[in-house]
Length: 252
Image 1 (cartoon, helix red, strand yellow):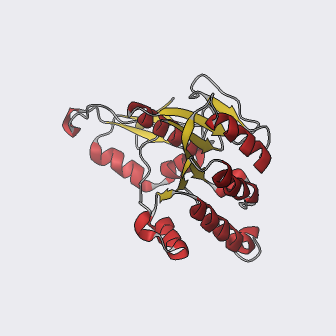
Image 2 (image 1 turned 60 degrees about the vertical axis):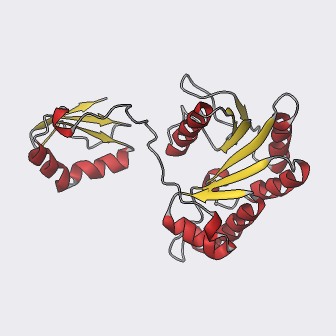
């Protein structure tokens, strides 16, 4: 069985969702599924760590999406399932991807054999009244409800999203909550805590790592655990220290 994952971007683009899709594809391949990816960002370019095969939309509109899907489910592609990663702001700058919902409606008519599963990573944004998300929240909610209604199955990764979808669609019992797994993989064997080197990893985006270094809890943890080295992984923040609580910080 071949499954198409619809995703805004994939590695080498730096974002957690692309890593999520790649990891999910690897897990599905291990279960015997064949994977294809449909990237909606026309500016995306593959790299050495990109999965394959990948189709890229030339533009974000319903016609381009349906043309790409027609090739993927045709004789040459043979796809029978689709996983749509719903991240509304990644598909339209104001978070209102009308084009995608319209394409899904036509998809169900043109390819009734294709099973559609939507994973809701986002539902809507919020802001004070002087921000556009405040005024667009209702539209974003209605588009999410419409996408859920067009899907054969839905899932999400937070209790809040699940409760919202359950309230809006009345399908709460059918929507599983699937917490986000590790995007960097897991070791096959986990040594005991006492057998490990007393070293610490600070990993993520520059903003989050900057906050971690400024937090007194990190220095407290280093002293309490006898940490001998900190390994910093990710885009370099401007305020990354050379040492923290006397512990050297190694940049990777």
